[in-house]
Image (tube, rainbow, N blue to C red; front, side, top):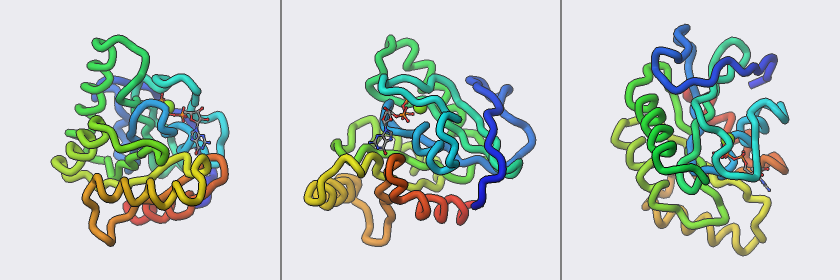
Length: 193
Ligand SMILES: Nc1nc2c(ncn2[C@@H]2O[C@H](COP(=O)(O)OP(=O)(O)OP(=O)(O)O)[C@@H](O)[C@H]2O)c(=O)[nH]1
Ligand SMILES: [Mg+2]
């Protein structure tokens, strides 16, 4: 997809605040710091559009971005080890669950997994929820540029094994730094629109 425009629209928590024009939505989910905001920016070729940070817990609300006046990217708050109180995490998780459970325009969740780390219990919970809700899900393994050649194959195989994926299931290795995997990610997004 050629990006003609990409604009921040709103930062929200409650369903009555979501956009109402019915344009299709692609959401980005994954633990804090896995690289959701960076991947969105890389896909859109807009460096500072979604705010990124070395400190986990940067994105704290659902952030909607209008792409080409045609669809929305939705940057979800990260789950997991964000350095915030439990009560705040519970509020983010609830906001995310409400969104996922009942969002008609949602076409695809891009679920990010850090290629350097083992799949966490929280990741499994999230992937289980997406399956239960029958939401089309694309798995991507982020920060692949940080792995050495040998580690790369091993870690990708490990992800497939832990998630018990079929041979034909896709896990796209991505890097927001080198651009690896971005065309394949766009192909999968385009297929859902
Ligand atoms: N080397 C490398 N670093 C990355 C990549 N993607 C993200 N990072 C770095 O990882 C850190 C976290 O990235 P974010 O995009 O802010 O992560 P996030 O998932 O949006 O985090 P939260 O908003 O806290 O949930 C930043 O320091 C990024 O520069 C990647 O593909 N390669
Ligand atoms: Mg973020």
